[in-house]
Every structure is written in C-alpha cells, then in structure tokens.
Length: 161
Image (cartoon, rainbow, N blue to C red):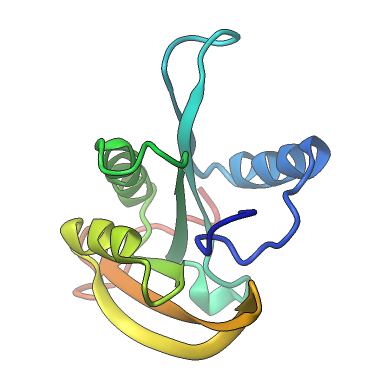
C-alpha cells in the first residue's frame, strides 16, 4: 500500500477500519481468508483475501468481487493462488454466478497472471483512473463465471441465503 499499486488506498487503514471491513464481509456470509505461517497468535500473516459485493444495487446480487493481497516478498509462492482458489470455491457454493477482479495498475503482471490462471478473462481497462505516486494508474477488470455462469437462471438468491 505504501510502496505498491495493488491498492489505491494511500494511507493504510487502521485496526478499527480493518475490523469494520472484516465484519461487513463476514456479516454478509461472505468469505474472508487469511494465510499465515502458523496458528494465532504466533502466526505471521502472509496474505489475505475476501469477496464482497461488486455493486450494491439489487440486479448485481449474483456478481461478487474478489480482493487478494500477498505480503511483499512472498509473491510467487502459491499463497495468492491458494487464497483465490478457496474464494472461488466458496462463492460458487454460495450461489454466485460471476466473479470480478478490479486490479490496480495495468502493469501488475502478478495479479493479472494469477487471475488468468484461475479462469478470469480481461473484461476492461479504465485508463488513468487512479493517481498515486505522482502518476496516473490504470485499473484492469477481469471476470470469470462461477458454476453455471449465465447459462441458466439462478436456483437461489445469495443475497437471501
């Protein structure tokens, strides 16, 4: 966050804000996963990932957005892949039909490659949508279907589950 473009936040959120975000995600019955070196309280956080609503308007209720963050220096060790795979499985089981990734920086080959390896395709580019570190930064959107995707009507409504 302070040195990278994976997040467009410029000031790291404090514990209260991270707790609020965690409670918002899990309060909706959505997954929030943490990869550590061991058990709490001695484990070191290597990465985390969660899924939240893509947008809050009701027609988007079958579409979900993922966020995956891996500790600096730990990229390329399978942590992001393990987190994203588990998120995909969990939101598929919850009945969601589309998963969207909103990736900061069109040069973020690691995140773009991770998502592509999990079946995401590039859905769009928002040029110069962020301004960080004294320069304009693109946002890449990627998407993948979940379960039957748009091949049939949903059997149940994840917003009501």
